[in-house]
Length: 113
Length: 115
Image 1 (cartoon, each protein chain N blue to C red):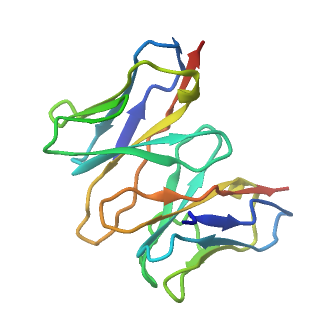
Image 2: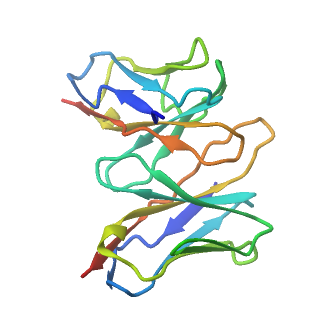
């Protein structure tokens, strides 16, 4: 079966532009997570959905970051007015059960110039 | 705040030897601890999960230990192969009352296995 997919794989944005990153989780997975990974670091949590409900957004760095999962499947992470410090790999993960392993997508590498 | 420490320097070992990676955590008590492997340009891949009431878990050439007193997990790869070269991430997990399963990762340890 298909794993977690993300698009685009690479995105270059000019400072100040808005971007939208898409995540298609594994079918039937209730939990969906977004992480941000800087070069040489481990992934850092951004936000968590259980079905369509966003239960934890404590990791979103500013109000420029917004995530949604309106129908409990596909999710979009939107970054408004991008800044250079937003440059990173954005990883999406899904999980079928609480406390169990997470399945990660390949990530979207965002470069803000 | 919660802190997870892994060997920041790369671990270089010869093929056939056992690689041992360390994960230390402070300021919380995880119910589970997960280990992931990450190759360059790819997302992390789940390897093993160990619960707080388990001392040791094995899967093929992999072994994980979990010492809640020392607040430490050790990850062993026996008979290591060049294909084991990757970055290994640990992620202790505490199921919070507000219903989030977010993983807090260490910085990862890069393992290089030489033939």
